[in-house]
Length: 181
Image (cartoon, rainbow, N blue to C red):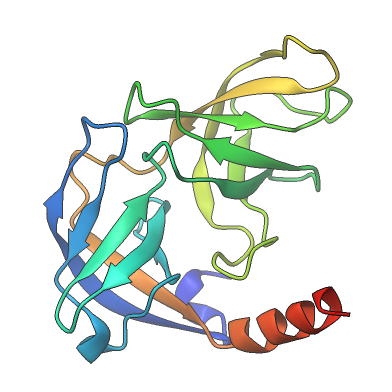
């Protein structure tokens, strides 16, 4: 289902009013904040795909940790499969990222779609991240090194949606209750 039609999600339109794309620790600034219902750890997307995660908020602004930040780690999978990997960014190109931890026996081909896995409470499953642009076995064997052409053009990102998962708190509390035993 499109993001706007998922019943457990609420989204708020915002605009990027400040952005860096040429640093290892890029950040985006949104024109909406706590006064608009924006909170830390909310997903940020646009019509192209995943942008990042709200890292901090003030009453009128929010800072977003984009997926083109070397501190960002996003749980992803290749559409059509259930093997989860981590999307990481090496700090080189704002159009390319890498996926690690997908086993070599998984069926992956250049051109496959990479989406969010749903393994975190921050990003719903199935949001567009990018497409597989390169594929080779990693140095240690057993896993792929996957290059991903990112769907979002971070040099022109402006209109975004901040996503609130209305079931996230319930899930987090349940998972935390088991961890504490």
